[in-house]
Length: 267
Image (cartoon, rainbow, N blue to C red; front, side, top):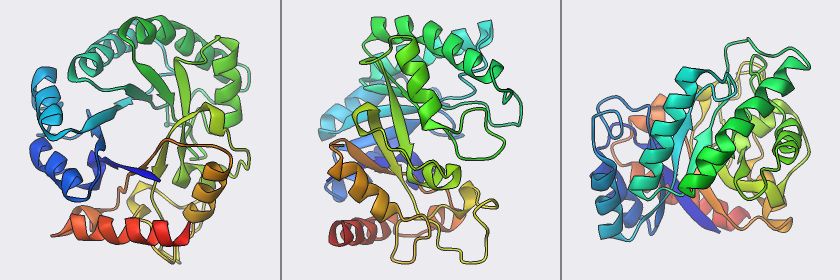
């Protein structure tokens, strides 16, 4: 198993310290984010600076997370996409995560699929030219405009996007969506987190419930990982906990190390 660290694991940690955290865990792949206030990328850190920090440590930036509302394609979204793709290219990132609208709009059958294909058709040449992979991440929330990996896979095929566009399998969103199908050959990245709160319903689960993977995880993240690996997935398992309890840890490295040990032993 190959592990990766998403900056959401320790969002207040400056980028250099975050990269050092990954190294201390023997992890040589990270995801950086464009939604962390006061941190790279929003603080104005140049892509060249990010590239040097990573190269000096022998770390690969596997993605920038993320182009939000990508399936609401507008002139403003196109400009945002061009800027993020250029940043990914220049900092050495291999991919850009694509996150759909998640506000209850754009869910109408027919229009939903049309919007998705329009966006992917527009993104495909931009990504191709930069040598960047687009990672489509369906979200399992009921209000999301793209919850189904099946629908995402069909859209990628419809725009002849194989090789440029892949799927993100997120263990949290897979559980919420209740969609059993796996797409290992089309999966470019797996996000892992767990939910240990026994009181919250599945429908009530939110990002704030997402902790590191532990023994009492309700998402069956271990089962999902086993199934993906058995089906041929050989990419990274990237830790992406959103829970404030994780972000407040004085020693996040120790907690991630425990989670890695648990996953290795259980899988």
